Length: 507
Image 1 (cartoon, rainbow, N blue to C red):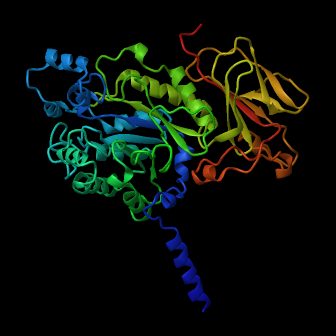
Image 2: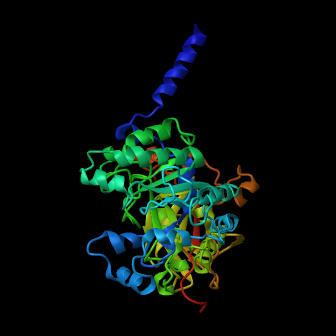
């Protein structure tokens, strides 16, 4: 009888864990932990739009979709292409002849990113894989004549990176979508015969751990059948335990429903959000796709990227940094330089970023801008501007006479003095030469007699829970979203400080 009861309990537990096709149920799903721990991802916008390489990945719409059309796009076509040239004629020129997925994956690995998201299909409808629902408008039937999604996925996973796919729900000029749109989205011909079969196929074939949905805003989620798809994804798909999704599943869903929130492109909240979020941004500030006429002053420099990454992580977000490859399959060297520069900085300062949580205070600006993160009982303070004097003052951390200050990667103590009897400190910095990856500073606690010497080198603090003042309980939405909330324990004597590179040449 006892055995039967145990089996019955297990069955009830599994049944309760299934999600139903409504937002109340779907929004209650915990975010898989790998995503919040990863912090940094690489976004790749690549498609037929890379061939004209002008304006942005919205070129086709700006040229022939919107009314009136963008005159600069009209002029570009009239000056460079014969009369009557159509956008689909760009597809055969999408050769990707230099595309080496291993080289791309090496660059992404060197950037310090933990996940990669490729455009499987943008709003133009062209799929970077051999979709049976996109006949002759995919990378296997035309252009590269290869499975770009599959080839990159294999290379990325071979380097222990998570792999995700961007998918646009709508397609600008698909006749079935235009018919549904004309019918006020009361018919679902496009959804049932194109979108959903393709989406299910993509998930089963490539098993993406991120589904970055987009192109949802013209119709409600009920038109897209979003909740039905997500219920299958979370319950029965081959990635049900690891997949994460964003919030673009229908008009009104952004910043309200889904896994993590994007809210809008380049979203930058002014304070700590209550839900896990991601900032997607692009090295090219004018476009997500490749532009042949991009200029250096239109690109984010390394210092700006790192400062943006730090601010995002301090506020509990992930940072998805975009690059646009060329139509022949190359990542422009200037993009590669930015990515490798971020990786160099993270090699030294990554412990303040990866698997970190927001601290009770996210930022202060006493003498220079400082952003805080935390991990367990360790607090990190990241300086995002070059100090004008050889000292840095921090008012928020608590200190004691035994607190030690050292450079990250160098255990030699640095001089410091308290601002108040038990809080704040002024650190005397060594001379810091310009480098794309400046060393960080560590504030280490005194070693308790019960703490093994080996723990000091790994920056662990030995102590009882009672030694740490308590913070208010974490908000349920933070825990549910996998964010974890502000650190619930704060060491009075453990702080780590890292410096970001400053823009410009060496002084």
